[in-house]
Length: 388
Image 1 (spheres, rainbow, N blue to C red):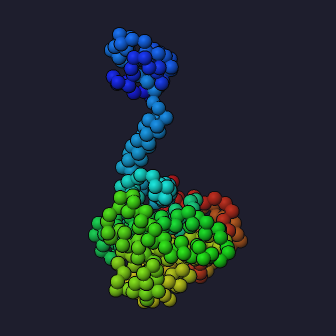
Image 2 (cartoon, helix red, strand yellow):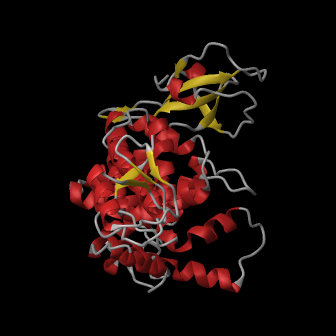
């Protein structure tokens, strides 16, 4: 079907050659392109019948843009229950948002970050274990996309324990998703770089909080908390951060939350030159920095929320099995339950055909430590958490 618009009086004049072919309402061709309108009578008859023309290139692009925005708006109305599907769809939206911002393409930043945040919030409420597993597993997207998305998920889990209200949560998560837009292209470059940073790169990294703020202001963001959090997300409790070397009492609480989630997310996400740091070691490294570069209370909260053996972590069991943690340990009065795990590889190295959940609190399935196995066979990770 021809994409067309009705020709208005004044668009065509007597003595003018048509710049495009024209059609009637049923799309029958009336006049070829470059046909000369010979008289006022001819023009009146044509206009009375109803003249239509095809879209110009600019009009077609604008119409396609509107159609894409409408489709995206409809898509944003849908809520995804499966955290793994949620992560993939949100990663695509985050990637497009960051590309549009760095290219100065007009986009509704607040609406898009609200949608992504709502998806994250929904999955965290429905199944926090599976959502954490999605953070620790599957890395189909670039680091520059996964890192802010993982950070936003971790922020949501932390803020639920901190009793932030919905408006505060939204502000922090929007800041987490856009915190590194000022170094979006550089992050992709650094992902595979093994050499030491150049002075130019160091300068760009130190300036990226302020550059991110400038990009967001140009995109129409005026929320002072959102912008302040981004500007301060690399400040440190001991005053050794950047760009302003603020100390703990002068750092926005939202920036402290992002700083901690940012640090953990960076450690557990792989680079092209290294595997991800296992969660146990990442948490241990962060724990040693508590009260210095990161907030002590928030650090302890992160450890309790994520768990020493987070969902999605690979562990070794005392019986020699390699397993995946599917449920965190739960603190209760009188003690703490052990993580639930699913054995996937036997002591001999073969994959189990039938995967069974184990209670690592039992002596025969006790966890002896974390590991990073080589997985040669595809694993349906969502299925481990009941999603098919």
